[in-house]
Amino acid sequence: MKIAIIGGGLAGLTAAAYLSENRELEGTVFERSPQLGGRAFTYQKAGFTLNYGAHAIYGIDRHTIHQMEHDLGLVFQSKQVDKRKVVYAKNGHLTPAPLDFMNIIKTDVLSAMEKVRFVAEIAAIVGNVHHIKNYATLGDYLDHSHASEDVKEIWEHLVCSNFFITPADARKVSGEVIAEYYHNLFLSSKPVNYILGSWATITDQLKDKIEANAHWEIALKEPVEQIVQQDNGKFLLTSKNREATEYDQIIIATPVQQAVKLLDNTPWADALIPYRDSTSTEVMVYDIGFKSIVARPFHYISDMNNKMFISDVSATDHTVVPPGGQLLQGIAYLNDDFKDEDERKAYLENKTAKMEALFDEYYPEWRESVEVKRVSKKAMVSSVKNIHTNRLLPNQLDHVPFYFCGDGSVGKGELAERAFSSARKVAQQVLSHILKNPEGASTL
Image (cartoon, rainbow, N blue to C red; front, top):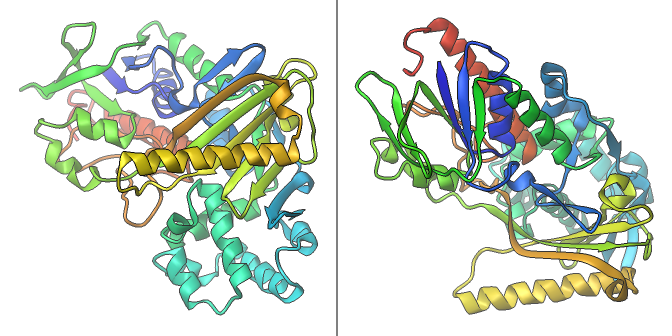
């Protein structure tokens, strides 16, 4: 049986790694870029390792990658961010971020009575009895809450930080999603970890596992252009540099927007209409690398006023810098509602200036010490922003003979975990379907 996987990001590589373990299958991973990884792409510059996407894992002990480590024999190390060196900045004042019970006691962003209330809310979420899950959105919950404005602001800011969105969008995240996310995170003994060596540590192992099966290939710079279903139920797939090739099954592991475009003008286009207008999560990413440590006042600072943060990535993952170096990553949450291009451009320029001002304040010598700099003013974090007006793409759609996976598809968790978990689930479904229908595996 022959399988085509469209997309060589975390989801596509994960699905292929699972399927390539079955020696009766053969397949191709099609990736339109010149490299694998998608938004988890890693590259080297002047001894620094830069990521198109943070390689932080939230709740690694409860994360899908923990299951994959066992299933696929992955070998990697991770290191936890020092919670005692994570701070919030508000009105020029620094205070410990309220990430756990100890930091909640120490933080200045809440009064003593507010801390009691906030601890009670966290305990209720851990116990899975917090009624936020019964509200359509965080905004609905906060509107009906009798909490102080400071407690409400903390809720908005936590959701901003973990979902990489603005406060306005944070209020649109469903209460059920928030309750499930923080239930897992607060129960984790390792809330924020970095994969040492960046995403390449994982993607390289997935690639090696796929290529260990001689019946599988990875096709780079090979965008898929057309899919046609034949009378026998199989599919003819045409890509940029090769003629139509027959496959028994297809897995689409691309951002939802690309999946919609690929299936436009096909018999399956109407099934994608409900997902056509889903918006993506985009941020500004500002990476700077120094040959030596400029300053290390903390490992992570979140600016509550301007809704941006700076991570000292190298404070946790020493592998991303040359000996003695330092790598900072600044991220700003972005609005996506502008009346015209000039307004959007001015907004991004203002965000850039505010990020540089934050660097100026806490790393005063940074401008003279920069060895490597990369600024992306519009980087996609997730292909489907997790707000109630968007819909995640199911792994299977009625009357569509393909499988879907990725961070914009239905799966466990958020961001990278959803890519991993949806791909793992799809691979298991494909294998199960093959066992049940060995002669007609392309029918769903």
